[in-house]
Image (cartoon, rainbow, N blue to C red; front, side):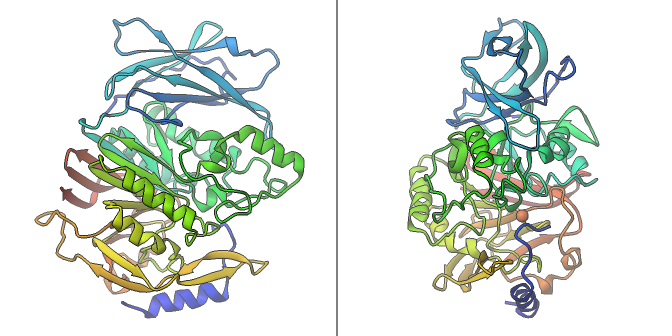
Length: 493
Ligand SMILES: [Fe+2]
């Protein structure tokens, strides 16, 4: 281990506590004839509460007006141009009336009976008139190859975010996974409107954004900028994560003030407005799992407010991975990387506590963000030394910032992803260069500053992960916005 820089960074971080929040390939063609004001947020696809290869959820946000009724809206879809349109099974909405943003409704329609892996068209009608239409692809079955992209720390409103979104679109993914920090700075509904929807659900593909969300389901893990803000008096439209994403609720149910759900703060009225709009998504939707193709995905909340020494939480992850025995691949996504070589955030090692469970659960790849660059570890096994040292800070000197977790690890340095494609251990990827300002570009050409567990480190360009899963072969590429390949490796079973 190279200890000098990390120790300096660690000492610095312990002295000067940082603030809680730091700074199959559809060819989407979309037509939107929406009259002005029909949508606040245009339709976007989600995997929903109970993902399946023949189902997707379509969500959109519309103004909450006295004149609008449920019956005004309908959704239709069809598998081919010569097929009749079929109506969406269910269509309902949740009113969102939190302070700080105009009242609106989050609509959701279930698109069911889709042909797994097949293309389909859909349209949203209002008052009997089609106001939005697009094409998409149904989720893949276990016997169908698929492609996903992953990039975190994205909705920053930077110039670099947009061409990378365009590269994601050009990559023609079936699925997109964001390992946290979807929008900056505080996870607000208003910030999604400024920095997320316009970039990932643009009308046409340009360097300023792309029509991805209407054709590709996105899945998200909660980052610190998404769910750490709990003061609803200061930020009444915060915690948008629970309001705009539609994901499974099959994780453990936590209690406010318990080991993995911090208490809400703010007036009773603001708290009630939020919990009413969030429904069952709050507080459950931060740890969940689903299957896509022949892969099992486990998404967990790595925010420092979560106590990963908690038995209930650890048992859930272990049981979830054990239940995925039929899956060929096991992928995990969470925001804070346990194994990070960048000087930035190097002290936040609390997710290392999960390593033995991930190894026992035969996880192939872990995707994280938080650190705004790209890193790939050697396949590794890690044995934490006890539970590490808790770091607390903040104004109240009680805010948990994470843990420093020393331990013993075994690296598979013979794995090169080319001639040796059978890793011994878990590969940890940091793909946090999705838009926010890059961290530690000075380390790009300074391998001596990397930890021994790091095999690849790219901090001089924004990039995204493009992964192809084809039976027992997984090919992962890391691409810049220009399409330059900065890493590539293959894993076989
Ligand atoms: Fe982060």
